[in-house]
Amino acid sequence: MKKCILILSFLVAIFALTELSAQNTIQSYENNTVNKKFILLPVKTGAAKTWITVNVDGVWQHEFEIELAPENPDFYATLEVGQWKGKKLELTAETVVPGSKWLSLIKTSDQMSDESLVYKEEYRPQFHFAPRRGWTNDPNGLVYYNGTYHLFFQHNPYGTSWGNMTWGHAVSNDLLHWNEMPDAVIPDKNGVVFSGSAVVDWNNTSGLQTSPVKDNAGKITNPPLVAFYTSTFANRGKGKSAQSMVYSVDEGKNWIKYPGNPVIPHIIADNRDPKVFWFDDKQNPNNSHWTMALYMDGEDYALFSSKNLIQWEKICDIKNLGCSECPDMFELPVDGNMQHSRWVFWGGNGKYLIGNFDGKEFKIESGPFTTKYGGNDYAAQSYSDIPGTDGRRIQFSWMAGGEYPKMPFNQQFTSPRNLTLRTTPDGIRLCMEPVKEIEKLRLPDPIKLSASVNGLTNPIQLPNLKGELLDIEILFDLKSYNAADTNLVLKTEIFGQEISYRPGTQIISLAAIKAPLVPVNNTIKLRLLVDRTSIELFANNGVIQIAACFVNKAKDPPGLTIAGNKGLADVTIEAYQLKSVWEK
Ligand code: FRU
Image (cartoon, rainbow, N blue to C red):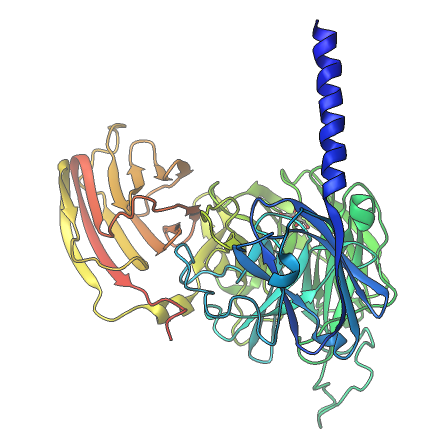
């Protein structure tokens, strides 16, 4: 009997498949001479996926998977075609559902998709970066050049889930107001474009600037910007990973694929995520060279060295970091003193090692440690080429796993944060604080309050706290607390998200995420950045940090309550409303 049912279901499945393939057809948008910058493609999240192949004058360019809207698109995806002006463009969709109106829904435009709708969406972060349309995960290629912060990002331009990995591109001059540009690096015969980094090649060591201009002091005034990424999954997933290069000779506006790609062929497993920096050996300048940190396999990484960004050789292994993917590596002064510096080696989930680097070997001194706890925070990367006069190590991270119900974009980044090494009672540790630029978003007249917390039933409330974008500083003075009582708890609640501190166990929590936090001189200092879909908590000047996303489905009003179940703590609050970066 069982056998019969099996055979029957098999036959039904074959029948259904034949039906489907009989109905789904190949359809092309063809014989169109490109006369605008963009083709806007209709997308419906959840619609059947099809591959679309892009051919120009009959030559294959790239292909991607898309949930083509048969009608009523949720949003329009942007395909840049301006580089092919005057040429014949053909888009072939492999499996189009019967009756689909996608061909008549396609638009051509000189503007990117949904111009009048974008940044006005219900769950659009108001001072955090999220793509205009589509999916993002890791921040990539963070580089500063000539007054501009470049932010590249893992982008699926054609859907709101992971796929078609491409480097999106946005620029800013203050790390807060981003102007999204057309995608910078798109998939090709070597595969899709995974994570990586970018540098300014100040001395044109690569020779990629073929018309260098020098000033009177002999300094090149038009250095190339060079970016590294992992190309992988060529042939619809069959190809292996390798490290590739793109460069720009117009200050990062246009990116040219290096014709000799990949510059580092496949080594092992899914080795990926190159992070490149210049190792400047002050004592022995001849020993200065480019260094690449690369994720290898398991929990292992390796360092490579190069004089010209093109030929690379392996110099050492860094094993058992306790995490995988997305390395970063940088030198920082300890307590602000550059005579006393250490190197930090950082991995995908924020585990880091402290050590020394002589250009050949990374010698581990301590770690792995972490500053960031759980939550929505992964694959962080720090900026290259921040001028010495600024001197900061500025990092963005992906707020992995946030939810944005029914939105035409998906995922956001953390606030930009500054990393420092500080001596703590436990030794040298990495601290993380929001960059000072955030304070420029503060509206005047903060709400200030000093009071005593005594009892859960008698909470301190800030009913006048308005708005959904907040920057709040809270100082708890615990001197009257009986620290031995493990039941004591201090609670803060905002938009239904609870932050609590238990002096007895020295644990702080935001929503379900917990982190250890030792009071300093009997005080706990919290900084909260609250956006429409996220809260970031920095405690005691960033010795610990928690980033968490939330969806305010109940549309809870703002307002802050602070309460404690027993004993007494003095609390000082300064709460600012912030401006949206989308406000004109
Ligand atoms: C980390 C990661 C990287 C990879 C990229 C692909 O989130 O898996 O290792 O390059 O995402 O999107």
